[in-house]
Image 1: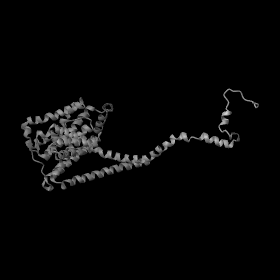
Image 2 (image 1 turned 135 degrees about the vertical axis):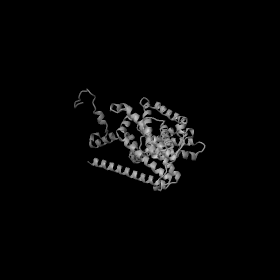
Image 3 (image 1 turned 90 degrees about the vertical axis):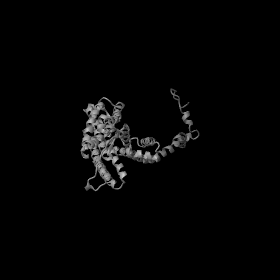
Image 4 (image 1 turned 90 degrees about the horizontal axis):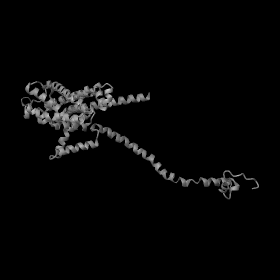
Length: 394
C-alpha cells in the first residue's frame, strides 16, 4: 500500500512539475516580443517555424527509424505553394496554410512508396536526390515559380485592433501554429499510430507479428513528416515574403537533419533545441570567423556531440546521472579503506599463528609430566600404525 501511495505521489509531482514548466515557458514565450529588439524577435520567429519542420522530421527519423535527407524539398514545396497562391491567385494568407499542409501530405504519401522497399543508406540517397533535383526544377518552371528570380509576396500584416508591430504579430501567429503542431505531434505519438511507429523502429519482425502494417505506417510517417515541413515552409513565406530556388538547396536538408540530431532524436523537446541550434549557430560561426564559418559550424557540432551524444535534450539527464553517482563514490571510499588496511594483517597471519606454541605451554602448566619437553610426549607416545601394543614391562 505504501508503494502505491509513493507511486501516486511521484506521478502527481511529475505532473505538477510538467504543468509548472509549461506555464513558465508560455509566460516567457508571450513576453519575449515585448522585451527583445525587432531583429531578435525575427530570429525567435524563425526558431519557431524551424521547430515545426524538425517536429515532422523527428516523427520520421527519431520515432520512425527511417533516414531522410530530402526534408528541405518538402519545406520548399510548402513555401512555394503559399507564394504561388498569394502571388498568382491573390488569396489570403490564412487560406494558404491548409492547402500547403494537404499538398505536402499527399506529396509525402506518394514519396513514401520507395520507403516500402528501401532502408538505411539507400533510402537516404533516394530522398537526397529529391532535394537535389527540386531547385533546378523550380528554375525551369519560370511562368509559375518565377524562375531564378523567385517570387516576392506581401508579409502578413497585423490587424488594427491588435496594436502590435509587424514582427510582433508575426511572432504570435507563428507561435500559435507551432504550439498546435507540437501538440499534434505529441498526441500522434501517444496514439495507436505512434506506438506502431515505435514498434516498427525497434523490431520490424516483432511488430509485424503483433499485427502492425509496416507498409501503411511507413508511408504515413513520410506523409506526416512532409505535412509538418509544408506548414513550416508556408510560415517561412509569411515571415520572409520572398522565395527562390537557391533558398532551398540540399544544404537545407542536411542542416535540418543535423539540427535534429543535435537537439535530440525521439524527444519532444529536441525539435525546439535543434531549431535554436540551426538558427543561432550559423550566425555565431559567422561572427567568430568570417573567412571560414563552415569550419566553425562543424567544430561546434563536434563539440556538442562530444558533450551530449544523445543531443541537447538528453544533456540534463546525463548531468543528473553524473551528480547522483558522485556521492556514492565518496561514501564508498571510507568503506574500502579498512579493507586495504586489513591487507597486511591478513598477510601476516601465518606469523601471528603461534597457537601451537602457546597451547602446549598452557597444557604443560597443567600436566606436570610434560614440563621438561612439551612437544616430546606427543612424539614419544606416537606409535606407528599396525605396531603391537606394548606391555607394562616394556
